Amino acid sequence: MPNEHLSLWTTLSTAWKDVVLAIGLSVFCGLSASLQKRRKDRIFSLVELTADVLMSGVAGFLFLMFCIDRELSPWVTGAIVGIAGHAAPRLLFLLDQRLAKIISSKLDHSDDDHDQAQ
Image (cartoon, rainbow, N blue to C red; front, side, top):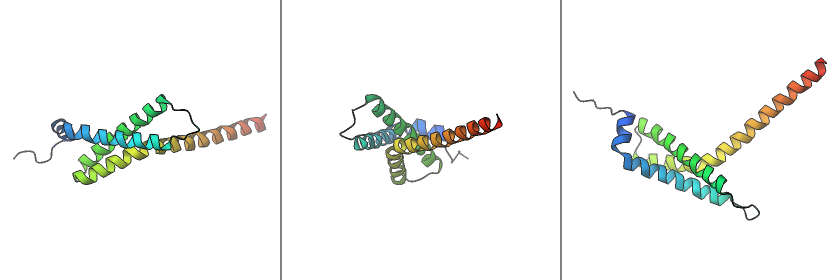
C-alpha cells in the first residue's frame, strides 16, 4: 500500500513553484504594509524596508508549512499566508516594544530592591 500521507518535505520539494508563489505573495503583502506605514515626516530607510520584507517572507513560509501540514485548501492557504505576510512586521514591532517594556520594568524593580537592601 503506497504512503497516502506525503511528508512536508516531499510536498515542499514537489510543489516548489507553489512555495515560491506563496512566499512571493507574503513578501508582496509585507512590502505593501511597509510602504503603507511610511509617513511623509519620516526619512525612507532601505534597511527598515529590507527587514520588513524578510520578516514577511519568513512569516509567510512558516504559515505555509502550517497550512500544508493541516492540509488546508489552496484558497485558505493563500489567504493565511498573505495575512501573515502583511501583519508580521507590525506584530513583531509591537511584540518587541511590549517585551522591552516588561524587561525594563523588571530591571527597574530589581534596581529598587538592590537600593533598598543597601
